[in-house]
Amino acid sequence: MSYQEVLGRKTIAISISESPDMPALGLCDEHLRDAMAEIARHLLALGARLVYGGDLRQHGFSDLLFELVARHRRDADEGDSRIGVKNYLAWPVHVLQALADLKKQIVEVQDFAELVCLRIDGSGLPVEERCGLPSQVPTEQEWADGLTSMRTTMMSDSDARIIVGGRIEGYKGTMPGIAEEALISLRAGKPIFLVGGFGGCTRDIAEILGLIPPRITSNPVWAHCDEFAAFTVANLNNGLTSEENATLASTPHVDQAITLILRGLMQLTKSEGSEVEK
Image 1 (cartoon, rainbow, N blue to C red):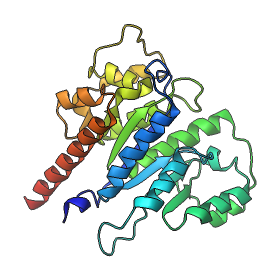
Image 2 (cartoon, rainbow, N blue to C red):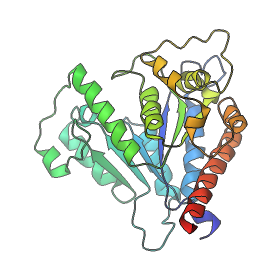
Image 3 (cartoon, rainbow, N blue to C red):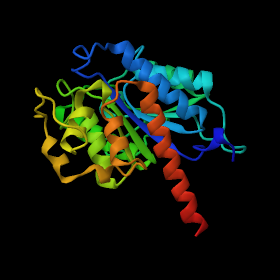
Image 4 (cartoon, rainbow, N blue to C red):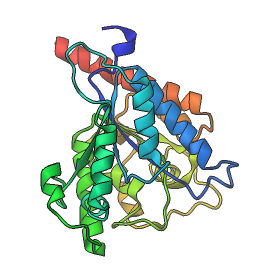
């Protein structure tokens, strides 16, 4: 297998959203989009498949991933028919959409990406079945249940997760989305990469895990933040040393973050290969 194909059998989940700390760090939404683009581009170039759980807002992160896959993705291994990116749509997300808009979006990306509608329990909902359902406004409980189920399904379909930024207010569900996705992966023992240079929920998690010292003004108080106290740096399980994880959790340089992410993923791949040989 060539260097370009080293991640050809890996599926990486990406968790990213705006951070309330970005203005204070001299950053804006465009910096976050650029960071995601660079991280995704390197993963795709090395053959990885990406999974993402988000809505389909115009010019949102889903659109960015679809554009990257359309431009840069190629099958890393002959006979491997997996698509470049899978975008999970939680029940409350897609049930809000007009059916005509949803069908149009599915057709537009079908050559290089897959949109997967989920039931409220996180199981797959065939497009034909979704077409027979009317659009509706979800209840708060449906938002909470649907988002948690989607995040659990996404975790089950991925080998590792990369986490960046994260709002801690104005979210749907039982806790900030970034936090819940991180917590579900930690509980499952899946590798996690905390890219903390954009602050937000990701940096809060890194502080709680003892990766980096608390900021003077830091005081994570979002819902269920105390549940992360049960974990340590070792639970990141990502092939990096404690020092490397501390750097990843604090560096403002995207190139450095990408280098560390790829180092960890390749180390995990190497370790898995050694286990197979035994």
